[in-house]
Length: 435
Image (cartoon, rainbow, N blue to C red; front, side, top):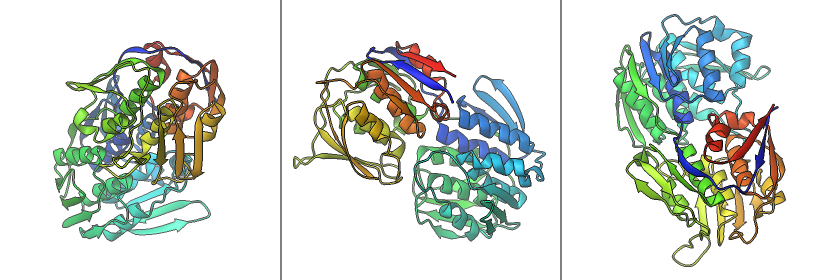
């Protein structure tokens, strides 16, 4: 298990370019299974989850060609369906959360799929009901082997229908869309997720010959087609990295320019950081975060304590609440962080408390942060990363802290952040990776 050793207290300076969006690329790679023709995908991030999914596609029979450092060509014209039923395939799926999005394309094109209950972050229950109920409404049948935690799905003749999703699940919506594009007739999905990742998936599928309308809304209409062709697609910049770098600049009192952020796709993220008192300046498609010695959390109009909560798009993504929480520890004022969508994502705050942060964990979903206003700095600590987003939040805390910090289990950070120590070292951070 690898670790980071971080010498905190150094200001950062310079420019940084966000990687391609992790949450988008996992959907896009699964969608390449929908056609036997070549699909070229660029701005692919070099991160653990993505690399594992690419290798899984290779082993399924997809021909994968690396055109440049961040561009791949996928050709799924000879899929090995026997491999999809193998023990090796199921074991690997169980370790990769994104593998659940293989179901829609496999059932749509081949009429069958097997999938193990997927792994990923340890952030509480992440049920798959939306995925299965939606594809089931298209005509697929499901069986579950509880002893092996394996789902078997069959659906030779999917047919379009109307469905109202019980939750606006991003991966669930993606799976249903990918199943519906090759179904007979028209599918209407209400309460669909409408994150930029879903919008990108729909635009890519339309470029392949699908007929999807209502993109960017929560009401999608999909007219099924018989086949899809190849296309070229570019992944958006990762909004979670953009938010992480904003928080990192504020927490360390640094001036950083974040380049090529696709500002129109950031939604409420910039405003959420402004509510913490952080100054941001949009310069074309870049964001300048100027050096600030102090930043003050806003109050609501009636003077009550600020609450920052996650919500389905266009609300604030839950993936940034960990970063916002740690940044608030050095602000002036107090804020209630309300993590509504996952039940165990705030449990990392004990590590911040050990570093000197003033945080009251009210319950699994809520934490009150009382900002230090830099009256004293966090102190270095020894900690373990429980998931991707908590991992980057702990790294931000360590960069701002007095003394040496060690973060273990950094494979969790590697799952979502590309070459993070080299990129931050280029800005002036002191980070060493130890195997």
